[in-house]
Amino acid sequence: MNDTLIIKELTKTVNAILNGEATSLAGLHQDDINAHSISFEVKALYDCVKVLNEKQQEASLFMQQLSKGNLEQDPPKLNFLISPFKDLHSSLRHMIWQTQRIAEGDYNQHINFMGDFSTSFNRLIESLKEKQAAEIALQKSEERSRLFLENATDVIFVLDLEMKLIYISPSCFNIFGYSDAERMNMPMNEVYSNDELQTQKKLIQESIDNYKATGENRIISYEGEGRHKEGHSIWIETTTRLLLDKTGNILGVQGGARDISQRRKAEDAVRQKNKDLEELNATKDKFFSIIAHDLRGPVGSMHSLLELISEPDIQMDKDQHFELLNVMKDVSKTTFDLLENLLIWANSQRGYIEYAPKYCNLNKIVELTISLFSQAALNKEIKLVNNVRSGCIGFFDYNMINTVIRNLVNNAIKYTDIKGEVSVSASESSDFLKVNINDTGTGMKQGTIENLFKLDTVSKSTKGTKGENGTGLGLLLCKEFIDKHSGTIIVESEPGKGSTFSFEIPNKLFS
Figure 1 (cartoon, rainbow, N blue to C red):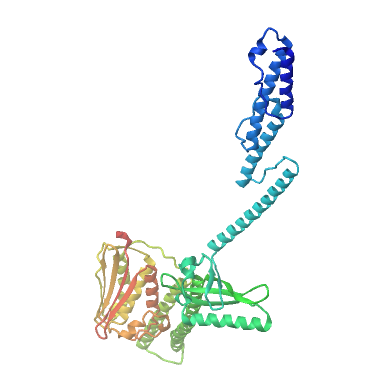
Figure 2: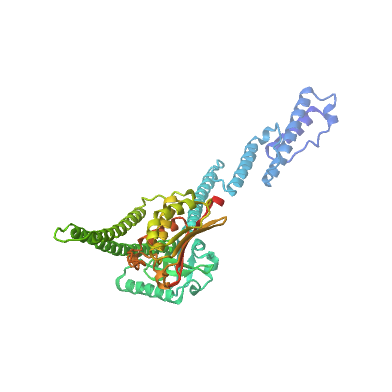
């Protein structure tokens, strides 16, 4: 084969390539090209056309796969025939990656491909982006609403006109102990009594009637008792108004409820406290009136006696004069005791007496008390006995317990007959110290015992065995001081069989 035939065959192949037809150099054999009769230029042209044909076949295969949507293949390297398709391949692969990202919710992609197609696609992305923003905002709003309803102290609810729950917030657990699911399936009479339900229905019906008559959707509030899941009662404050649609038709009732049990307890406590204070003030007024009357009596007697003694026209011998002085002495002692107890009690009421317990010797307190009243006991030939052991140590406020023992011993002497006996004893345990003041006096009835430590019975005490006066204020002080020690005071007595006053206080010395 000569140069002319080879060039003709090569020209045919090039034209086919330019026309996009499938070609091959099957008509030319390598032996023909390698023949000595073929010029160097023709051989070079053959090699170029051969390479061009290979590149054309390679490009054709790539574009066939690309047309089938196969984007996983890599473009042939160093093939200038597919340069435009390489860009297309790259753009398509990038667009697929972007589409996958968009499908996953990433709407920050921007397509720059194929003119109008890109514009439409980008508009779609913007719409999806706006939709995503709206969904996120709605989700956040729903989340905030859910958190509010779950964590709100108040319960939010909706009822239909038959008083059946349509909705109740999860916070109902905080008040009723039921979950919202449990509460939705419960009839109202399991939470409220029939009377309570009738009251609620009446108020709602009044609200409906008022709305139909005036067009005013009033807010109504009421308080009532409900039942907790655990069975105890709870006080509920409920606020409701009618639920209306856009045209004003009544759909049901919406409202909120809150637990006001603690508030009700506090209000009841305040009311009770005010009542107690009113009673206490009234009793104190009565008490001071009695004290003033009792002071006026002895002070008036002393004044009359002094006038009698100092009257120059009245002649008295020495014995009469001495007798009047003894009477004045008794009156002054009674008045002094009353004033002293009154001062101590007043200071206690005003908080001026400090409770300061410490380790004290009880035996010494009893000894001092017996010494103080030895003359009074001698006058009535009463035997005073200290049965408290010498080493009896207790943990208490010295002044308060001293006042208690002094008053109880004084009372025992007052109501003990001539040649009687008053004794003080004590018993100790690991936790308590008990003191007993026993007398062989006149004793008391049970009704008298029950009124001994009451403020409104002060100044109603009976006279002693020698006509000694008293107001009962000393016993009031005893009760108050024992209370400050968190102790108890007990009286055992029968008419004609004497009395035993006992008080027991915590003994921290051994605790």
